[in-house]
Image 1: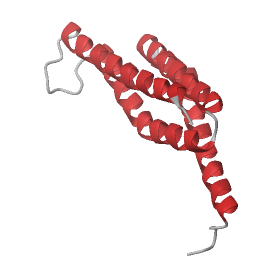
Image 2 (image 1 turned 135 degrees about the vertical axis):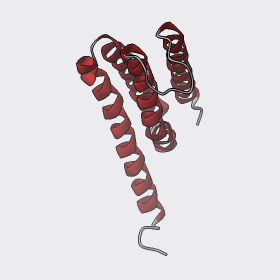
Image 3 (image 1 turned 90 degrees about the vertical axis):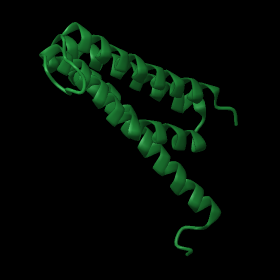
Image 4 (image 1 turned 120 degrees about the vertical axis):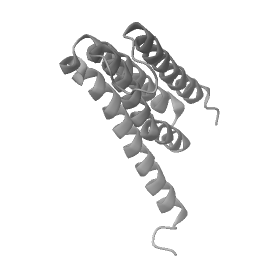
Length: 137
């Protein structure tokens, strides 16, 4: 089965993470936060937190995306990944402008990730049942 859409979503997530990292570097210069300081100015801290939170969510998102794609059509899995990407963008915008407004973006990041985990688990269980391997050790 071809997975170009899932691959494209994966690359988009990686590019998005790179861009967020670039925004951290720009904020470090703009707000005069010398390396290796992880904090130093509220606006720099916001960019840094968005980048780190995105990295933290990707640790779950990417494996869930790929495992789910092994069991479900990419036309189902890839759009869920696109919602994640939109959520991350909204998270960035909300957190930078007013940290209390990050909730929608966070929800649109974590809910698709959770959905992918559920799809992956269902796919694995269905495959085990179809193969008759559940309970066989």
